[in-house]
Every structure is written in structure tokens, then in C-alpha cells.
Length: 67
Image (cartoon, rainbow, N blue to C red; front, side, top):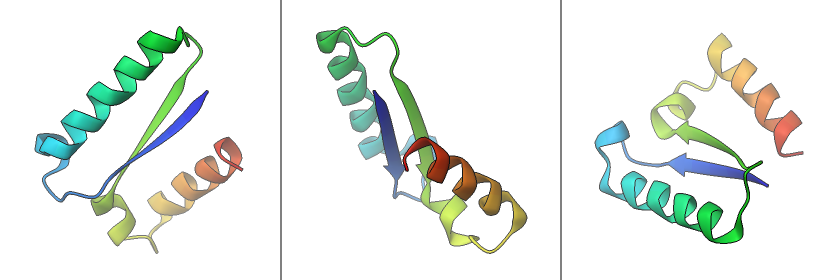
């Protein structure tokens, strides 16, 4: 299973909503017994500068993983 977790907070890893989302994903994986789960996290601050070279690589990876 592939999960895309988007962090919309500019607080980054200190975001309460991100902590809750991570806990939810961990619980879901544990409950479903999905050892082959891939979780990809994208932060809003990465998307803000979407015209730079870093984002192009991220975009290509996302399109490949979540086509």
C-alpha cells in the first residue's frame, strides 16, 4: 500500500496535525498488517518553491509512485 501524507503546516515536524496523521497511518498499518506499506511525506514549504530543481525531482518521483 502507498500512502501520500501532505503536511500543510509551515511548522513542519512540530505540527500537531502531522503528528496526528502519522499516528493514524501507523495505527492503520498495524491494524491491517501491511508490512510493505510505503509512506511518502510532502511538506507545504517544499511545494511553495515548486519551480526549483528540487521540486522537479520530487514531482517525478510522486508521479511514478502514485500514478
